[in-house]
Length: 182
Image (cartoon, rainbow, N blue to C red; front, side):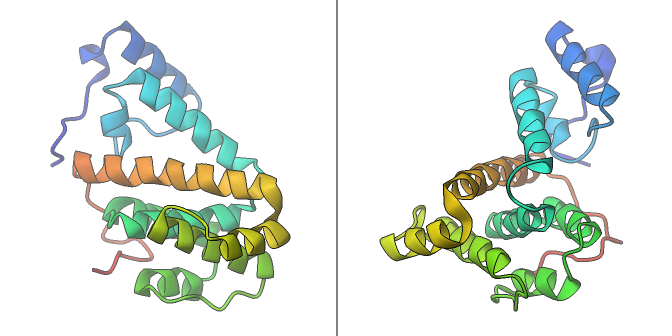
């Protein structure tokens, strides 16, 4: 049971219904996970889904988006999105040893220097809220401005996901390929 009840479509106002229908038509999430909370605010739900869509086709690779997602939801100790993002990460080709290193709070051994740069920039941003001059210079050289900006956007997106899941009180799938460690 969640702390925020699932809204049935029959309980929604016109704006909520329109957003629900649009989301359901696009095969996106309705009635579970953080979407339970989003359903109460069509504007937040629409904005979040647009952000999700953008991250599927941005200058970051799908694996890099999953590195950011895992690091961010771990930072916020959000168990439900951790299990969901671990599964999505595996499907995107992210090795389980990288997922579990992030889960353990260890720096993974990346084969790709750009993935390592994404990890380091995300880590510094989550820990300090900014990039030092040294961190910015390293990210600029390895990622470029566009990917730095999209990295920041991805962190914001997954902060919303993590915090909404925590507030709603959703529980992770016990059969997920990875569970968030305390």
